[in-house]
Each structure stands twice: as C-alpha cells, then as structure tokens.
Length: 191
Ligand code: ITT
Image (cartoon, rainbow, N blue to C red; front, side, top):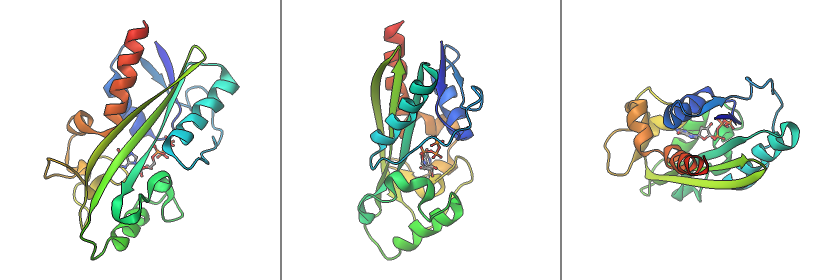
C-alpha cells in the first residue's frame, strides 16, 4: 500500500519506514512534488497533525498521514511542546537545546516526555493515533545518533539518551513508534 507521509524531516521518514516495514511504501512530500509550506498553527499536537493531512487531502485527495511531535518538560509548563522545532526562534537545534538547558539550570524537576499524534486520511476518513515516552532531561548533551532533543533525553528505565541508542533500540520504545504501531495495526485491520 502506498501512503504519503506529510513530513519534510528525512530522519522521521527513515524511522517510520523502518517501523512500518515493506508492506507499506511511504512517499515523502518531495516524492509527490509538494514543496508547499503546510500550515502548522495549532496549539496542540493533534491540531497540527490534522492540519497537515487536511491540507494534503484537500489538495491531492490521497491516502496520507502526518504527525506532529515534540518534547514537553514539566518544569517549563509543557514547553517547548508544539514549538519544539523552533523553540529558540529558529530551526537550529544547537540553539534550541541550549535554551532548554539554560531554562532548566538549577531545576531539580527534570521530568519530560516526547509525544506524537498521527493523523491519517484513509479513503476519505480521518483517524488519530497517539504515543508517549516518559523520561528526563539531563544536564548536557550525550550521544550523537538520532535528531532533535535526543542527546538530552533519557527515557524512564534506561541510562542512555536516545542519541546513544541505535535506531532499532529507539524505535522499540519511542513516542513515534508507539503511535506508528497503532497506525500499522489499524492499517492491517483494514486490508
Ligand atoms: P515535519 O513537521 O516536517 O514532520 P519537524 O522536524 O517539524 O518535521 P515535528 O513537528 O514532528 O517534526 O517535531 C518537532 C520537533 O520536536 C523536531 O524538530 C524535534 O526537535 C523534536 N522531536 C520530535 N520527535 C523527536 C525525536 O524522536 N527525538 C528528538 N526530538 C524530536
């Protein structure tokens, strides 16, 4: 089955293609010739995920899914949340991580979670799937794998950051993999 994944993030595409396996061929926005700046103006992950697929469905009438994800930090009242990609005002992850670490300096409560909400359009019907991984933010960067805030996030029950894990390890427990597993289970039940 071919599905368009509404993302411009090559890391996310790779992660999700690995999770869904060969049965589903994922096409990126570039693959369908879409280089539009799809609006992401919601204040929740669900609103943003919905906006991405509403846009694609209205424009191309195709089966598609999109996710919105990010990091919620308790001591920062849930920030960076939906602003995770541009928390410092730019997409520069060095700056975004610096800002998080600076705001958490001296803070004992380091609790955080990654969240993903996926919106799916399948034959004109819309569905949502969610995934969360709880963890904590450490004082400095550790590890070089992954992307985004991976170098400063240690999931509960582990002593390594996401950036110290292989993609396989991260995919066993990540927010995105939990949401994608629900998506895949649903797609399989529809065939
Ligand atoms: P698209 O909207 O094009 O899919 P994006 O990079 O903006 O790509 P999201 O909105 O889903 O992706 O995620 C927002 C940011 O949250 C992302 O840029 C990362 O900084 C962070 N993030 C999301 N998932 C993450 C993960 O698995 N590991 C580390 N950081 C993550």
